[in-house]
Length: 336
Ligand SMILES: [Zn+2]
Image (cartoon, rainbow, N blue to C red):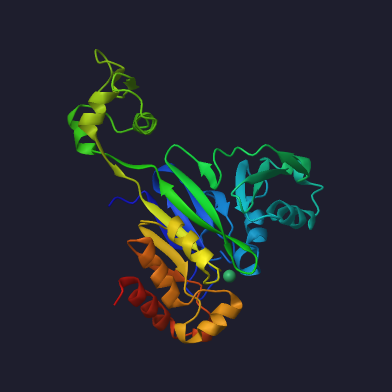
């Protein structure tokens, strides 16, 4: 399967939870959680435009300051989504610093923050470097409840889980997997170039077969049409299939409500990234701390019909014994 999303854990499984997802063809990336991100190269962090935060325990949000330091003075819009109180939290973070010289910077860093409530409804606030990060309330661009962002290629949805406080679980879903057959493009005398991007967008927008699609030719455009019918290109150079899906779930108690929500969120995911914080022999501790055990995580992945299970957020009490957690989860996942 071609990799349209390239998801990578930010840290090892005992480190702060976090998932960096490279959107390979878009030169941008998405981050789930913002704890310690020292292991992510600055050039990779600069590609991040959207950050989805499960909750504001320190290990999930303490990386805000170092990211801010990297981004300050750049022309960029950073979007941050999180549970209720996120806008206030970012405002307090920004108020902790003095911004009297920020007008002199080249770029105007804009941070747009979205609070997501239990009903999946968003509220938005914005902070701009140019106005010394004063808070302004703004319209939320939400299309449907629970869907935080919907773009031509993909969407991100959220559910609220219980961890003694509201925690968001996320799924990233590609709308459709579209592959361009490069050899066909070339054998038609067409050039590989940016026009393929607009062609893909037209396909995703389900434009009609007769719609003219602008093309670029390999050896000059003289005597050749500037457009071809979309239907012809769709037939000749495209291979399409259902899109990929990944889900990210950390910090939640094993309750019937959470179970139901996680199974729905992660249904048929290609990869479910999920916490496996404790071994099942310590399930009483897990319940008291409102975390999942490895066995519970594996069973959830199995019930959701996920194709692959990746566990993270291991408790330090099992340091040097990470394999036990991973194995217990995989056994429950495979039902063995
Ligand atoms: Zn945590």
